[in-house]
Image (cartoon, rainbow, N blue to C red):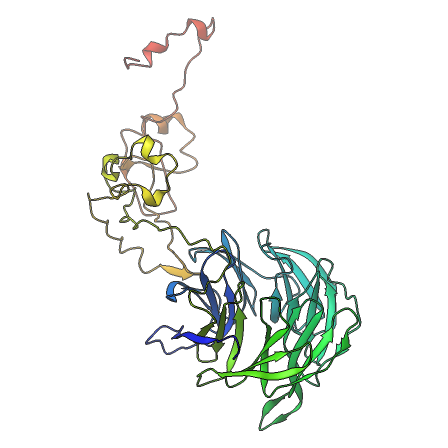
Length: 469
């Protein structure tokens, strides 16, 4: 190709030794850091650091295939066919929710970059806009049913349908601003927009050997009038992507990994060719904000990247993640006599001022006393994992901030003064039974004061308070 694209890496995103393998269903470059995010058909999200492509984070986001990944400074929102999930930057599940009336999500897009608004499209007759932070539906509007793909333009969204039509809707109101135009005879597979040009690839009606027939033309439209321009001839195209650097060049990705560089301004097709080594079908492609990195994923979970210059980066002004200190050992606060001095001294004030935590002394946070307490074996049989978080029922026999010897009582006996007087003499060890409550020890019980005739100012409180204070 004329821009000298060369392969950078090819790696397997699946865990070695695991029988369940998932193909790559979506790719997303981080808008701030040098990280590439990949979602699989098995619901797993992986974060790969450029340019070593080391797996720095991996978590299970959903049971359904991942449709889209949306990143912000504090949270990661993943959209799957079954709903949405919000995780922290470390992969900890925060919330899992679904949009009302939105079943079978097939595509999603962020209409305004770096915001929390997400537009969802699916098999229904509506487009739904939701807020990822408040987990509420912002707006919805009726459109042509069966939306298969969406792409963001200048204040508009271009939606591809299962019947081969494309429709232009407004970003904020989701109302159609033009009539639907037929682009392909079958399903629209991918759309790419740049300026006033829209390119699409899709399928033809019917099947061949039980598989859909791909259209041999890449359709080009003028978004202002939705008039079709001269199409580009390309064979077995499943993905189209406008290249950055302010050009009219389109990358057409074939089903078997064939790459063709086309120019939509004059209809020139195939002035650059390259082949990606794959044993399956390419399912998704993505381009970085700088236009220097291209990423491709196939149905076997193999990620392939290409660069056009040495030292390529994801963003123009990247923000590398700060180095994190090694995590200290876990020390439970209950059930141990660990002193506060075990956490190590804090650095001087002049050393802490203006310095991040990663530059503090290594001994801060180190715990060398008392190894980790063993887990109570009575909690293991009832341990459950849900949404990536392990929980266990609260122990019935454990009472916080109470003495080790307390008395059982019932609702009828607890209101009597006789019980309060005998609480200290009739104590029994705490019980594992939930049916019986516990008595208040005498040291913490309420003391009834007999108010004198002339008021509290004549009462001698020292007779009840025997301490020196």
